[in-house]
Amino acid sequence: MTPETPDEKLRKALARMTFRLGGNLPVPRLGYGAMRLTGKGVWGDPEDREAALGVLHRAVDLGVRLIDTADAYGPHTNEYLIGDAFPRYPDGLVIATKGGLTRPGPGKWVPDGSPRHLHEAIEGSLERLHVDQIDLYQLHSPDEDVPFEDSVGALAEMRDDGLVRHVGLSNVTVEQLDEALDIVPIVSVQNEYNLGERDSEDVLEACEARGIAFIPWFPLGSGELTRPGSPVAKVASRLGATPSQVALAWLLKRSPVMLPIPGTSKVQHLEENLGAVLVELSDEDFETLDGIAAPA
Picture 1 (tube, rainbow, N blue to C red):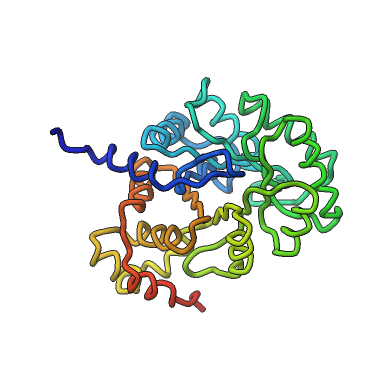
Picture 2 (cartoon, rainbow, N blue to C red; picture 1 turned 90 degrees about the horizontal axis):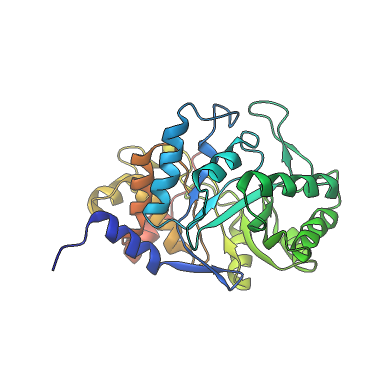
């Protein structure tokens, strides 16, 4: 019997670790966040477009079936890149995008959750991604100048019109999640969460109770927690893994609804991140990592 290649091991491990978005859209629980495939400040095109396309192709080749993007990344250039990378989307590939943030300049993010803007945003995303329906469309951020129910109501209308298959939220509280659930089924919440940043613990628990996917953005956190000699680095050394892999493995073990989407612009880092599915943390390792406090 021919031994499995490293790529085959990764594909099989990812395939075994599946979550069903909305109960009917299966994706491996480790995806890819495409935000870094842009220029500096998440602005403009990537410096090396062919290399960026190569990262997307490699992710799918290794078994990734959830790619997260947003119209604000670039703005627009990230979605164009994904649409150009896949003239025909591979079977089972789920593209999740977001609307509700505008970009007046590099490094600047301004919410616009008005129904008018969201309807215009979805039309643009459909065109750039070359699809008739968005698999998962997420409100990028609540807009304090727009009633939250109006923003969510716009997404509900898109779902009713068939432009969106599933609706998700980002950067929300438990109260906002409950309010949205009274308007439209919510299949995912994307908040910041990692070993050192757990302010959304209550949102994660609410998602667990409701069977909703929790997609942690910035899943690797800062480099402070993975510095040489840190608990993360010690566990990684013992397991023959990298600190990044251990940080992601902790997220995957933390909750069955957790779907990390680590991003990178390098194939090498992509392969390293995906290797987290091969890292088996013991209960003792998990508890050690779970006890890490956010750096002061």
